[in-house]
Every structure is written in structure tokens, then in C-alpha cells.
Amino acid sequence: MRIDYIHLVYLFGTLFCLLGISLCIRTARTRFGKLQDAPPVSLWITRLPAESAAKLIAFGALIVLPAGAVFIANYHTFEGVHEVGGCASCHVMRPMVNDMQDPNSGTLAARHYKNKWIAENQCYQCHSDYGFSGNMEAKMTGFRHLARYTTHTYKEPITARVRFNNQNCLNCHQGTLKFEAVQSHHTAGSRLASNEMICLNCHGQAHPTSIQRTPGSADYSRLMEPFR
Amino acid sequence: MRLLHWECWCAFIGFAITLTFVLFPGPYEMAVFTFVAQPLFAIAAVSYLCKVFLDLRSRKLV
Image 1: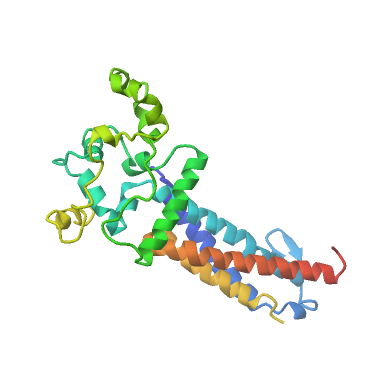
Image 2: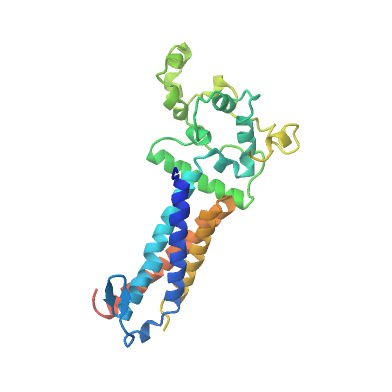
């Protein structure tokens, strides 16, 4: 049986949270002032004075287990958003995902998907800059999107606030025979590298247009179908 | 005296939210975890550490 990251997240996340809940209840009910006279407590392989044991449990309940639970949940967040399904769970993203998975679509995302130019995590591969700092920036943008989505403080069609970084394309394409054979890539090389010119200037629409994604448009209901 | 009463309830709510997010991930659960549970854990931890520090200082250990 293959153990995926999600199984470990379920296991350790549930374990940490349930243990944390039980220790929190115990600590909340502890009267620290009355523990001096209490009998010693057996803790695993040792015996501790009741006050020391209660302090140790409080440390576990308020520092150790929350740190573990937060780490696991954040890991779950960062791993989960790599998957296409993670992006599609917000309905404003459905037009992009449905279009990408549509074999009849000619958008750049759909062509990458149907030709399997990107094997998995297709959204994340193009929308997260590589490297630690780039990834952190992408995560911070993700938190802003999360806040806007869950508080319904957005308007459809959504628009990108940041300029797409060509480096995401160049990471795969630069240096390939096909890319190097095109003279304009060399002519515009410095402008592409500095994002002065974007790849989409020549390579067409990446996703459905904002007109297609506007509620009431002819394509809107097709693009908003639930994620499969 | 229940010294860590409200800190424990803050952490308790944090754990309950985190457990919900871990088992049933979704945008709303993620938002509640990110913007509610994590600050609750942080508030509880900071208050706990302050009380530990004050306790140590009252015993003249720091």
C-alpha cells in the first residue's frame, strides 16, 4: 500500500489535535495552587511531583502540540494548493480549470494540459515562481486571495493584480532546441528576461478571456461547471 | 486557582478548527484555520509564556 502525504497529514493531524484537546481540557481544570499536597504522578517511565507534571502537561498543551498541529495544517495547505483540485475548490477558478481540461480549447493552458507538457500540478507549475522567495510571495498572494474569496470581497471576472513572471515559462522552455530555433526569442531575449515583454504577446490567450468569464456571458455556464 | 483557564480554551478552539481543516479541507476551513486558529494559538502561547516568565521572576529565578 502506498502511503501518500495526505494519509500522514490525516494521521498526525488528528493525533496532535485530539491529544491537544484532551490536554487543554485537563490543564483548564487544573488548580495549580492546590497541587503541592497532591501525590506524585506517574508519567511514562518516571514519577514527578503533581505540580511539575501539571506544568509539563500545560507546556505540551499550549506550546508543543499547537506548534505540531500548526506545522501539519500549514504543510497540508502548501501541499494541497499544488493540486489542480485545490485551485478548483474556489468557484472563481473553475473557468480556468474547466477550460484547461477541455480538449477542444485552444488556450495555452489547455494545450499544455492535453499534450501532457506538464505531467501534474499544472496550475502550480506555471503560477508559482521557483525558489524560496518566489514561493513565499506566491503563498502570501494566496492568503490574500483566500481572504478575498471567503469574505466575498471580489468581483467576477477576477483579474490578475501581479504581472506574470516569464521565468515560469523560461524555466522549462529556455535552452530547448525548439525555443532556441526561433530568432525572435533571441531578439527579445533581454525584454523577456526582464518581463518588459510577456510570452503571451506572441503565444495567445493563457485562459478564457474576461468577457467569457463574466456572469451572463454565453460561455459562463459551461466554464462554471463543477470540477470533475 | 486555574492559572491557564482562558489560554486553554483558546488553544482548544484552535485545535477543533485545525482538526476540521485537516479532515475536511476547503477554502472556508482553510480561511478559518489561517485567520482564526493560528492567531488563537499564538495568543495562548504568548500569554502562557508571559505567565511563566512572571512566575519565574516572582521566584527571583530570572
